[in-house]
Amino acid sequence: MSGLAPIEISGLTAGYNDNPVIKNVDFTVERTDFVGIIGPNGGGKTTLLKSVLGLIEPMAGEVKVFGKRPGETREKIGYVPQYATFDEDYPITVKEVVRMGRRAGKSLFQGYGPQDERRTILALEDVEMVGYSDEPISELSGGQKQRVFIARALVSDPDILLLDEPTASVDQKLEKGIYSLLNDLNEDIAIVVVTHDIGVISAYVTKIACLSQKMFTHNEPYLDADMLEEAYQCPVELITRAGEEVPHRVLSGHEDVEEKR
Amino acid sequence: MIGELAGLFSFPFVQRMLIAGLLASVVGGVLGTYVVINRVVVMSGGIAHITFGGIGLAYLLQDKLDWGWMDPMLGAIVFALASGAVFSSDFVQNRVRQDSTVGLLWVMGMAAGMLFMNFVDKTRITVQDPASILFGNILLIEPLHLYVLAGLTVGIIAIVIIFFRDLKILTFDEEFARVSGLNVGRLNLLLFSLIALTVVILIKVVGVILVIAMLTIPPTIANLFCKKLSTTAAVSAIIGVVTTFIGISSSLVFDTPPGPMIVLWMGGVFVPSFLIGRKFA
Image (tube, rainbow over the protein chains, first blue to last red):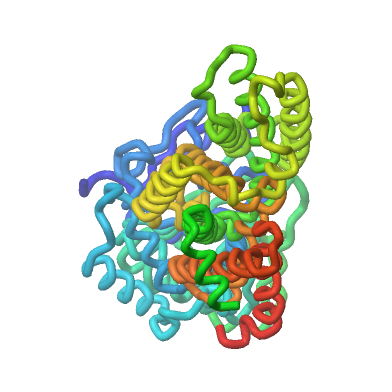
């Protein structure tokens, strides 16, 4: 398995009902990567994720996860959906939500065992939520819920973590907390974050890409205005956030990009 | 009054009524939990009303084709399962809004049922009074029906237990169920089939119109106090059993139909629960 890239996308065209949303995308995620994929709403970020997860079939091209079709390697991918898609009144505890991540790869009659319980606790420790194990998920704050969903993705011991807008519903302080958590996790596994928020993400990623029907990337951890303008189809100005403690790597030194503090 | 009630409990028809009521409240409480958390209360009401068409068709087939074996309950089961399949299907959902589909089939079922019954030669076939189909009449329950109810209840609960983990993932987060490799389409069909069969059982006890009460009120009360799906389903079944027992007993004492009495007792428990619930959760 050693030589195979976690995710290898070549010539991928995908979409719904014969309408392609993304066209001819080539992209590779390496083992040590922390990839940020940004792009406008409707640019195909979710379509790309669904292709990698094996939820939709490519119209052309192919997606390989460790050299196999996405549906055959479900345990290798931990997926964190965009938060707030579940019913707030659903009677379920934090531990039960995380344990769901152990379901993939089991048969119908193969129940959760002691090993599953142990991994569940470990995953909750990783995201510093173990003290909330028996709380109903509805009692948690937005950032805490997001940590629980990250734990659910981690509990299957994945080699890749895919996150869809992981900070869409949390405030700036928690946003940084979540990204530094992902940064720690990146020591062991590849991380792919899809977001339309180009602010905080750039401080942590090793590779950044813009997706707007087509993929714009130069395999570097910084963004330049040309790339963004091509993706967003309008002039873009890069601004770093005031009061940000983490040094940004966005600064690509483009003469047309003015840095503001 | 207690002595009088104890005396009534010795009658076989009263015993049958109690057993039917308790079976229905257990299965109603458990499946009702899925109905409530999955927000398909209105769809369940739709399934209940659509079965009226199946009951009417069964009588018509008994009359016109001499199908003596065509029990109205069989007609109800077929119509309930078919409507459950329609409601869970993507094919229909992609073309017509789901609540419109429910409204459409709801009235079609009722209209077809009334017309079918109208065509039945009442001198040949004894047709149950539509009012007792709508509001239920467990006084009329036959021993054979009781066995069918018991078999269905045991079967439904067993399937829920086997699929409990997957149904939890499905109802909590359908997308995650897909990502985990579960067959979401088939699981949804299974869940709707179980709900449909439960509706048929409940119709025997409280009638078409009051089915929604048995599927909705106990789980909603339980959901106010419980933080896990398993305890919600169990508590909901217990609330169902207790209120059904009190409802049937009081209907015997006051000489009223049992269905509406059960429903009002459930509603009576809901109001104070609503006021104190969630404070302890």
